[in-house]
Image 1: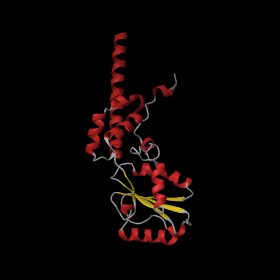
Image 2 (image 1 turned 120 degrees about the horizontal axis):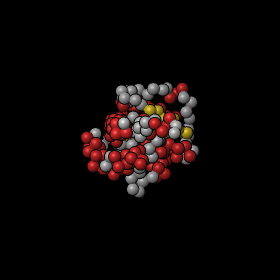
Image 3 (image 1 turned 60 degrees about the vertical axis):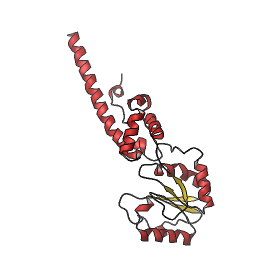
Image 4 (image 1 turned 180 degrees about the vertical axis):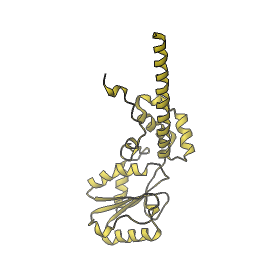
Length: 217
C-alpha cells in the first residue's frame, strides 16, 4: 500500500477543475459554437455575449476562440479583473493586425471613454471586436448566457464523479437561487462544503478505527 492510498482526495471544486476551459460550455438547444462564430462573422466580426456573473461567458469564450482562429482570424484576448476601468495593455503596441479579433472579457467594467476609444481603434484598424458584458452595450448580441438548475446539477455531478450522490438537484437549486444564478459562486460554496465534508469523514473514520482498536484489546 502506497502513501497515496492515505492521501486526502483532491477537492473537485478547486480552481483547476472549474476554471474557464476546464468545464465544457453547455450550449442551449439549437445552439453551437459554430453557429455563434457564423453570426459573429456575419456581423463583421463584432459582437457581444451578454449574461450575469457566473453564467458561463468566460467558459463560452474558451469554447469559441479556437473556432474563431480556425476561421482564419488571429485573436487577442484581454481579461479584465474587478475594478479595471482601462485596458491593461496598449493596443497600438501589440502589433495586432487584420484579420484579427480583439476579445475583451468583462467589457462593461471599462469606462465609457475607454469603450469609445477601443471601438474607434478597432474600426480604424479594421479589427473585429468581441466582448462579454452584463447588459447590451451597442454591439450585435450573439448569445445571452444563463444557468438553470438542470445544467448546474449536471456540472456538479460531473465534478463529483463517483461521489455525485452527495449533492442532489434540490441542494444545487437552493444554492443557485441563493446566488442569483451565479454558478461560479455555487461552485465556490461547494468547495468549502467539500472541505468540511472531508474533514467530517476523516473524524468519523478516526473514531471507527479507535473503536475497532478498543474491541481488539
